[in-house]
Structures are given as C-alpha cells and as structure tokens.
Amino acid sequence: MATGLVSHFVAMAQNNAWANHRLLSACEALTPEEFAAPRVSFFPSLRLTLNHILDVDLYYLAALEGGDAIGRIKAPASDYADARSLRLVQTATDRRLIAFCERQTEETLQRDWHLPRLNRKPPPSRVANILEHLFQHDIHHRGQAHAMLASTNIKPPQLDEFFLAGEEDLRRDELRALGLPLR
Image 1 (cartoon, helix red, strand yellow):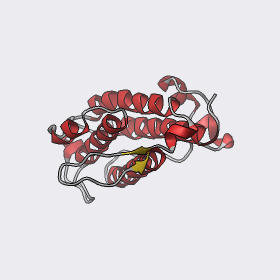
Image 2: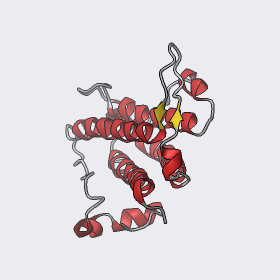
Image 3: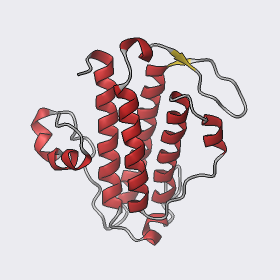
Image 4: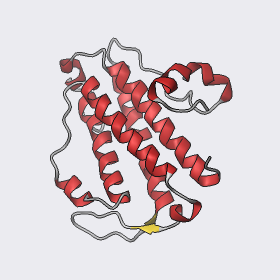
C-alpha cells in the first residue's frame, strides 16, 4: 500500500473518480436538451463544462504518461450529448488517473515534467504540482456544474463526503460500484 504523498494522490484520484461519478449520475436524469441548455457559468452549459473536465483530464494524462499531449490539444473537443455516455468515458479516464497515481513513488512525484503547449514552452513543473493543479481544476469546474445543476429540477449531490470516517456509509455503495476501496 502506498504511503505519504503517493497515498495522498491515490486518494485524491479516487475522490476525483467518485465525485465525477456522483455528479454525472445525477445529470443522467436530465434530458439531452436540459444537459445542453444555456446556463450561467464559465462554460455556458452542463454539457460543455463536464466535457471540458474530460478533455483536460485526457490532456494531462497524455502529457504525464508521455503520450501525444499536443495531439490531444489539437483534437476536436469532446461533445458527449448526454451524461450517461460522458460518465462511461469519464469513468475509464478516472481509472487511468488512479492507475497513474498508484504507479508513482515519492521520487517520481518530485520529477520535473513538461506540459506541452501549442504556442509556448513553459518551464517544467514537478509531477506532484501537475497533479495538484489537475485535481484543483476538476474541483473548480465540478463546483460550477454543481451550481448549474441546482437550476434544474435535479437535486445536486453532495461531493464532499469522501474522506471522513464518519461519512463512510454515505459513499460505501458508490465506491463498491466503482471498484474503489472503502476509505
């Protein structure tokens, strides 16, 4: 079992998967029209916001795994028209992120890594900082989607019941369904 910083990032990746699952599962009750309906936020719909989370996850994974991150940037944006289709792809992506975090060591997390960009060459960042940024990015946009969901007739799910022992019963069934260990 991983310890220290590795354990932290594995837990964050598991939390990310659970929160994505919970939010997208709630969105499955929306029609495709409601999912794509204009709403107030950085991306003007749930569909665009949640597809953006997927695209950024795919870009960061391509970069961190040594894949074609520039090709990922140049690829057309994901455009899953309904939450169920998007959830299936996001779940597979989340599993890749968990597996990436599980492969890390304290040393690899401190390694400098380049995130390729189309129009510039940024300085390297530590792998740990890249992961921190990715999780923060996803939390940020899930919060926006959560607020947009509140403007529908679907109750937004709690997304902060992952880490505390006293809340295990609130996540147990979903973690089992996702194949994630109980915390």
